[in-house]
Length: 388
Image (tube, rainbow, N blue to C red; front, side, top):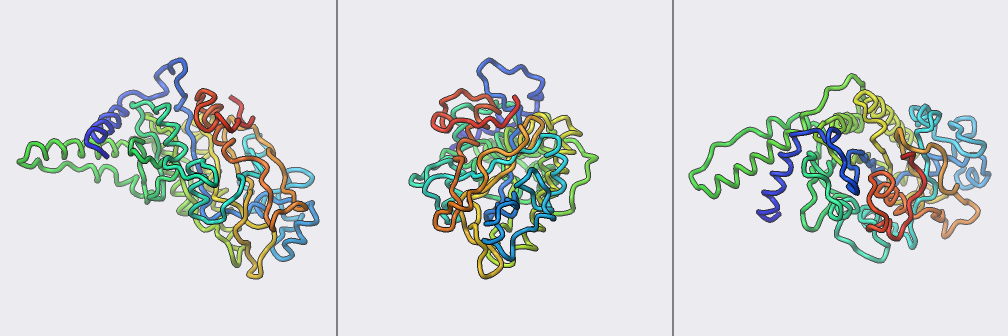
């Protein structure tokens, strides 16, 4: 980061402490970044067919004679589709119309490399182009998050910036590789003695100011909500507390690792989905506690799905399209997109029905109110997934 950007970032972050964003009027045409986006990355690529289960399709059990979930074990959503039983904590959200399932998300000419495909999802690029900016960094560059906000974005539980990655370094995003860093912010902001060199003293002062601003992450409410005693549960607690920070954050990303289930999938997948559901259900309760449920949109994503057929190791290999979840008080609950067409596979993979960039366009235009035609939503039209 250049010195001028460094100074500007410090001043902007410090300004975030002054007035809660909810207390300020939104200017005409200004994006409503008071609405929070929480991205949950299912790292390694979740097996969609055993998450959102086409239990009534006989081809499902033919393709998965050992991994297929029995009809009497799934949580039925309708006469042909159900959820993995480990997702039971999310069933009340479905019944309340606050859980949307978008089926068939993918993109043309899919890439089955973890590294390249997540890059495509993070940058909203086509499969044959390489972009340097994350899709959120690009949006914030065109319509900046107000300087009074604590940060543009926060990454919880990882070092990579993903959708916040910026070639210019202008995006005000913070990475908390370990959620416990959240509790250590005040200690990290301890003052240092001033050196004799005035120029160095000034730079260190700015560093100290930014560190103090980083400590502003701790200016968040304690919560009564009990979170699961897992790494993902701890990350959800951090997200919930940051959501209650009056300074404001536009977006956050959390990753749940372990979904690359090439072998012995059944038990691992059940545990992961249980962690996911328990953490998300607790996050909803905490957001209700802080009055943020109706102004928060939670969205899962992954680099791709898994193949339709099980493999010889009782697992599933890299695939293409998948189903993902939207949660929130303004979500149009129900099934969206198209169910998996198991009778029309391409090379053993599911055909995609909805370009994932339409989901991003929905966030930009329908959630934050960015003008139509700006970036992603100039080409990819939003989906009708939100009650706004």
